[in-house]
Image (cartoon, rainbow, N blue to C red; front, side, top):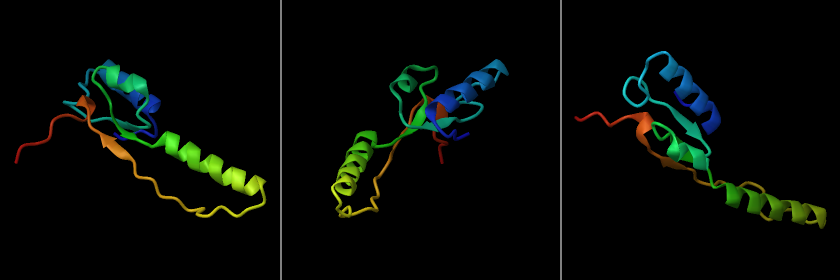
Length: 95
């Protein structure tokens, strides 16, 4: 299960555990955002880390350009997220 964000993924993990499933063994769970809490949960949550600082920096730069009457130099920016694999996604299957 890939939840829309880490907090939703934690809620999913909680419900699965309440129903007797072992996250990371019976079912894999992941989220988005890589909030600090998720590396300390049981099991630690696999997540997609988004470059939040860089998103904010570039957004502010574009807004400053717009406020000053300039067209942002590059209004289309592609930033690469990073997959952070932790125990909630289980072990890879041996081939």
